[in-house]
Amino acid sequence: MSEAFVGRQPIYDREFRVQAFELLFRDSAANQAHFPDGDTATSEVIQSAFIDLGLDRLVGQCLAFINLTRNFLTGEIAMALPPERVVLEVIEDIPVDGELIAAVARLTRAGYRIALDDYVFDETHAPLLHLASIVKLDVLQWSPKELRTLVGRLRPYRVQLLAEKVETPEQLTFCRDLGFDYFQGYGLSRPNVVRGPRLMANQLVVMQLMARIHQPDLDPRELEQLIASDVSLSYQLLRFINSPFFGLVRPVESIHRAVVYLGTRAIRKWISLIALRRLENIPPQAMPTALIRARTCQTLARAAGMGRLDSFFTVGLFSILDQLIQRPMEEALQDLPLSEEVKQALLRQAGPMGEALDCARAFETDDPHRPRGFRGLSEETTSRLYLEAVAWAYDLEQQLTP
Image (cartoon, rainbow, N blue to C red; front, side, top):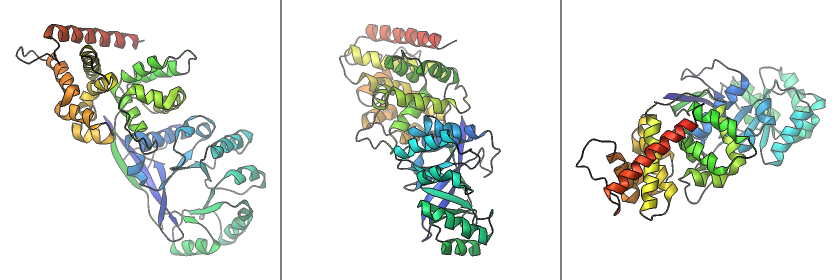
């Protein structure tokens, strides 16, 4: 178990209302960063913002400005971000060439707003300037005369201007008089760090996924099985798909439905993002317990002639979530908008799903007096299903072992 950290600095409009936050890489609560390579920093910010902490917690209804490296701009992961919630920043050290312009054009066609960070004017950049929505100018880099000239050169491109690194009231007044639209800097507000628990994904499963997701013969059912075999991946996927970005009327509470809804291509993007961060293994006994419970709940429901088998599986899989993230189950479930039936099963073993989970747990104890029946199924039948679940979980772990 570790923590996620994201720095955020507000961006103000001309009326000094907060319109956005720039999200910044941080590796501790100390509000400073020991920067790794750019790709890793970008990956950490995206992962923490959209999965670990949640975009609503970080920016509310405001926009999120996110710095992207060339690899992110030209790759597929940027296209997995919600275009109505983010502004993608082209950082200043990326050479402006045909590849970059083509990538930015693809993103703008998909509805993304592009900001040029720490921009230095160059007439050869005209194609990029015509695609951008916002140009950020470092006011400390230019004299007042140079800044006035630069603003004049940018006006024909119909971009909004953002003054960054504003540190004094005089700088703010000068930039406002020049017609800047947005303002950011220590003189307005310093960045603050938001922190929260991070649930790490199992490295073995992620590597197995990475090896398979780009194969042309990928079977969606195999993809479901690989994701479901790791509680942390399942948790992150369901939290992601149930985020406000998708605006689903009904919550998605199973891996099967998540894969069907997102499709293989989006899942590829999501898994690639997960793999870019440093991965750690979870406690060795946690995963077998979760898999056995999940399979037992599912097969009990099938044997009893019940529906929603994937939701029964979800209940068993997430029954150890409180142990993994070291938070009470009720608090852990707040990040997953599951149905009330699933939540009550996990919190109070209520309803058919809760009864199935209680039956699965009964086989983990030595108490001979604890009931092990389920919905009219004999103890002989439930015992057989439990043993089959144990064998299934063992076989699955063997398949994932290199």
